[in-house]
Image 1: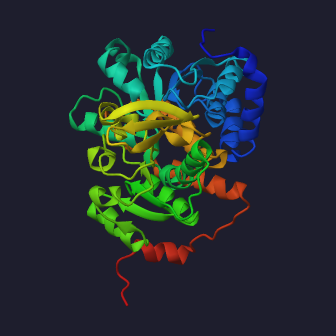
Image 2 (image 1 turned 135 degrees about the vertical axis):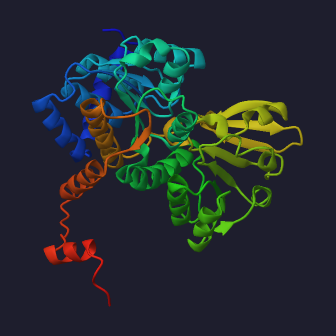
Image 3 (image 1 turned 90 degrees about the vertical axis):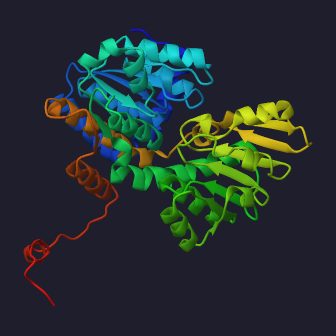
Length: 418
């Protein structure tokens, strides 16, 4: 078995983390039990380019229990938990190519190593594997049944590929499942982003002006958590519908130039490029903190910082100080990469339980329906989404009512009026 991890000797520590996460993932645990018995993915090569965390480990173990030949590489150079990578290799026999802090060359070489398995299903967190297959490894396309994508950023890229008619195999947008973005993006990103910022800086949020750029589900979660910790939240948006929602949710809404002079912390969650750019970086206050919880570090214009600063130094782990030419200091967290995974541990396992349940069941769906699927981006089927929600409620000891036959008939009818 081929692999590349930092230190296989970390496996014991990693196994403890994997087991700790598993206890908070009852839905995935149930799927693993079913997969183990029925082997719905027997012999299928699955290449997963995901954040290498204890929660992801439980997904990989579930896929293997389902009969898949599963391989894992990192979707972000800073998000890998080295001890988890070691345990997956040593304790579970799963090939992993991931080292925390790896440079770009190593990152892409790890993807290349994972692709040597000639995947039949791909799992992406940002669409890097799909992009490489479509650009540099077109020889692999014919053998791929389909793939999944778990991020807003990746789904944006893939829908663009579909619209431009260059998408060569079907994709299930796991990110767009209601049991994913309603909970993972809002509650998971909201909490883990705060965790990353606080671990990196140890600042008091109460009394600070916290600027959230992007009011999608991730932005909603971050704004909610920042406000709950006593910060005054400012939201920046380009979508008038989301902007008015933020305003009616009780947050200040303004332009980036206005916010630049007021904010203490700037956090990007858009999936777009250079949203923390010169308008903010040239006008923000001395000692402003800048971070990103969107998938790629492109959200912060790091090139502008390099070109307009006298020096850069690390002042704390995951905190880089840029001394600007005008004397201001700007602090960038986690090299501008995902702060919740770069400086902390990412989403809580109980939230990832639903996200990875979607991944596992979507892989099964792709394999069983590959002959029917077109070269499009599909939403997770509603019956899968609702079943995951039902199982999650059941695991929490929550019971809900059902419609009566009379109520169901009423909702189907059009004849009844007032």
